[in-house]
Length: 485
Figure 1 (tube, rainbow, N blue to C red):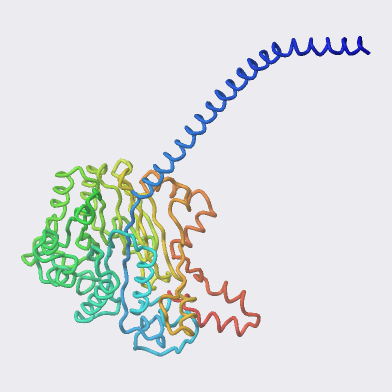
Figure 2 (spheres, one colour):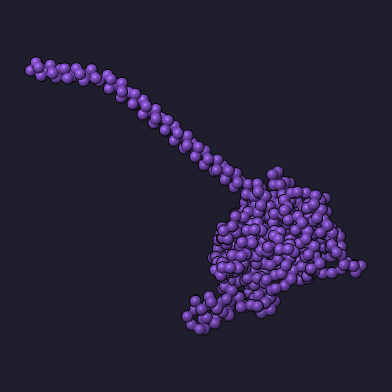
């Protein structure tokens, strides 16, 4: 026992003897291991912090980029119809003349009828939509043609214009609005004297005096020839752009009178081209051009827009200063269009975006456009096209008594997302046009967007889907607005 105990004791003593050395060995290994782990974790943490820092930096940069992307609103071709009566058809532009139709269907109601100019409640509904979805926009461009196609007397034309102005001021009392002369601002239609400071220009300036301030440089040049320039830094300090408003009614194929009172034909009506070159030559600021009637031809009826003697020098002029021009906006067509402006050698100059109308005259839904620009890159980035479906709005008005706030607004499309491009520059627009030309599906969708998603261009298609009996089908077709020519 004693031996076993001794042996055991000795064994234990040996273990105890060796234990301190093992502990030392173990402690050294531990220290090395822990040191390695600490260093490893430190490296991981540093990498993690670096990644997070990059993400935060990217997020901040993205946030800054988003902050720099501002917007403005566009409305045009309102053609307000103060005599609108839903009991009368499109042949009389829905005013009290001709034979009443007493159409009680949803396509002829409170907010108007396809094929007619719209009542004032349609304009007010659009303005409320603009206020809801464009509350942070910096300004409004009013791209011309405010009076009805059926306003044949000067007093009626003026009343239409004043009604539109009052409606806009009521909804946007403090937002800058930049009005543009369209053919419907002349009287009669397309008529505007080329004499400097003529009575009609003075009259329009007085109607728009809220926005064209008496004594301002804008008012002076507008009264001279219907054009003016705005330094957008007067709206906000870091909006480092110019907005130039042109009067292209003078260049229209349909413009009258064609001469000055002494019978001479001015080469530069209102000295507008000379003035435009001076503005572009004397500054390096990026500039947005706006006018009502664009150059080129209108695919709606294949008509030509400008007289050649004005079109060529204008293209040469903006080609010379193309680096300064960030985009061109116009109206007139009533449909959603764009033009790729090129010089005589086919080089890209600018994107000319044509906004669709508020009037229903060309069978489009009422709409407005929200354009986005980037202060940093000084580019037009994108736009959203808003609209409401006239049929649904009229249906709703039958029960809601025409509450504009209940209208269901939709974004018909976003330019960038829909066409998968980076921005709205000429290079991007060229890609879009090529895509529309090459892809039948894209071409079909473009056509729908062109008419602001008014889908019933062929009434028979819809009527055949919804009516079983031939007599019901015939009645549906007869009641449709879209059989007009």
